[in-house]
Amino acid sequence: MEVEDAEGYLIVRCVGEVRHTENIDYAREAAQACCSSKHRTVLFDDREAVIETSPATEFAVFETFIAGLDGRHLRVASLAKPEYEEAYSFLETIARNRGHSYRVFYNEEQAVEWLLKDVPV
Image (cartoon, rainbow, N blue to C red; front, side, top):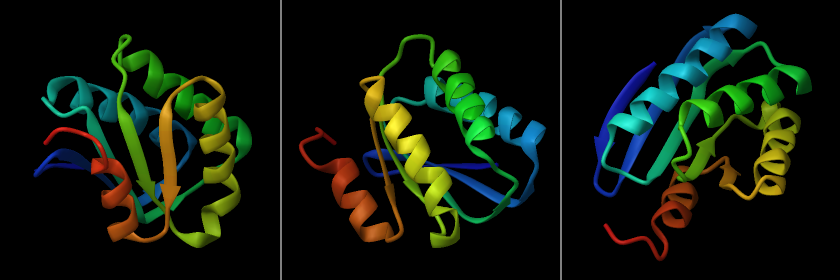
């Protein structure tokens, strides 16, 4: 996992092969990075990752990430590869149903535009 401060948001990149247990660890580490950051907006860039996923895994990853935020609310955009659309769509539905500001994108410009819209930088 790579973490980078950008203007107005935090970037969290996942690269390489990620299996179920690594995905859970990634969620924990990402939550810690978000809590350590001054930003309330986060861009997850998973385009360089090969993720072993299922709906159950995505649910566990989401629960782990949210628990790690310790009540902190963020605006989160995920950049994903189209072949993971089903898993990310499921994750987006879970997040929205729980009242979180989360969207999935396949284009970086659109993701950043949404992420920073109406958010003080």
